[in-house]
Image (tube, rainbow, N blue to C red; front, side, top):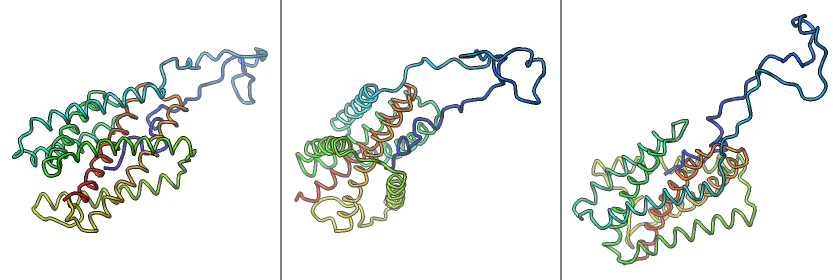
Length: 281
């Protein structure tokens, strides 16, 4: 649930190679104690040529259009896989599909995110696996409360759009303290939910993750906090993308941005789906 992909200020620069320093060229002024042979050459006026200097990078850089396009691709793959899973996974296989895709998706996130150069195939594989999870999860809720999935999808995209609008128009600034608080809160909630998931696998049910109108206040409170944290993570995602564009990160990093935003959007959708179920009989 936490976003380890772009939820940090150096998300698109931490894998870059530090700039190296090289010996001075002949055209530079000689400091005391250096090779006297170079002192025979007078200092040149104006720009000097350094034979060790690396040429400036002329590769493509990350742009907002790239990020939007890549995010549309990953979310499209998630949606396509979700529709197929929703239509063709039998009811009796919903629980195994949920558990299996959830575990595989979580492992894939950390394997892919840890690579210096994000593998596009890994991103798309995650999108397929997460689509299966979303499809099975949605089918479970739709069977119990018909029409709830459409409402959840609309609410998710409206929430994301409102978050982006607030970020831009209200000029929200993500400070180091803001990012640290969001990260700590998100990781704490993730730890609680991970322990709850492990207990569920061993047949222990706790009141912190329930669905339907019979859910207790603890479950409702956890879901509300999760939605708020998902929205705050979206804000840090937007800020990290702006930082990457300003730093002229390589175009390949657009996939990292899309990967991170997709993770947050899926999390937001599942929590909104839970909240909507609390108001259904």
